[in-house]
Image (cartoon, rainbow, N blue to C red; front, side, top):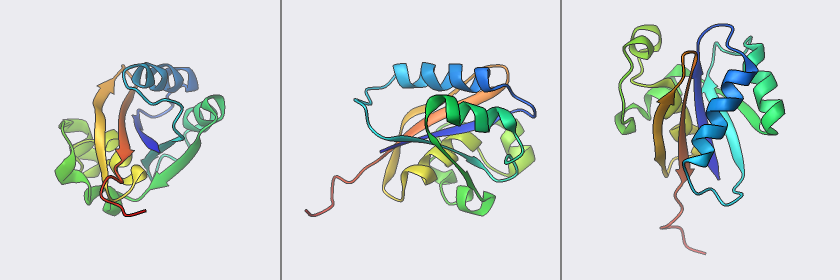
Length: 130
């Protein structure tokens, strides 16, 4: 499973979110894996996120800032805006990591457009026993 972390400016459009998510998916080998969108709580009223999830046929999950902070040490990029607003190095990277699960790793660090950021993490179950 892959988790696509998304950060966005207020009133972002579904089209902007969909375009960046599709760009991100083209950059990785995901071979039809199940994918979901994840972002920070407080974005529940963003219609663009909800419409994008519908357009992409993906589940959208909102994660608490405290939960996202647990993944902060694994973030690969720093956003001054995310730090100022949420105390996080990157909303999209931490959301992707938490969304993919405790043994996840980033497979695409933050990419951005003028209104949206996106990162992808994959659940890593390599050490799990059958």
